[in-house]
Length: 243
Image 1: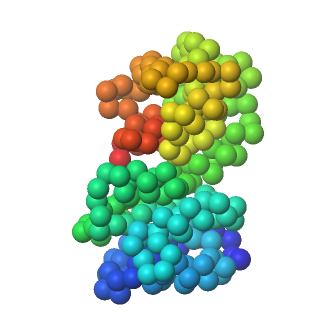
Image 2: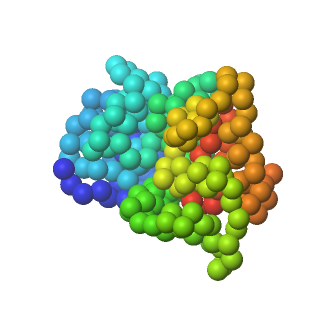
């Protein structure tokens, strides 16, 4: 299999007209596009290349997009390739399910090619940041925006000024920095915060998030680092982008 090509995009959709439209538009904007009609063709393409991102329709002949996304996330060779899910069904439940099985973003049809391009570019930027963050995870200093989290000393610094964190706030921020650009459910965060227990109606995770946002967000009411994914949990974006 070839090495990853950041601008090589696989578009999987059973609509030939849409495939042609996206291939032309994305190609005009500097991307190399390969269009595919179904999951079987996608599997063949993934043997030949490792794409920068996959645009994946939810409703496909044969295996559907949710199953394909779930399998890709379970396959170590493609577990971190960004997936933009497309669907003619725009209900919130479809979006949440898509995110839960591993999609990185969700776009309901009909959509403008310009919006899809913007979302793809955001996914590619975040993927690049995640690669850098994974490398940084083995180091004692993790950077996001203007901040540096020192794992050895448990200190958060911005512009040589320490931002005081409680032990609970530090633990939560450490978990987020270890798993950038992933949707983490509240129950998942509880599991990751070892030694932390809560009852079924306990909102302690939300309280921790609120307090941490007050210390790292420019506007805690419109957070860019710790984003709420409605119905699914939280996502830490080290670039601090609002999307």
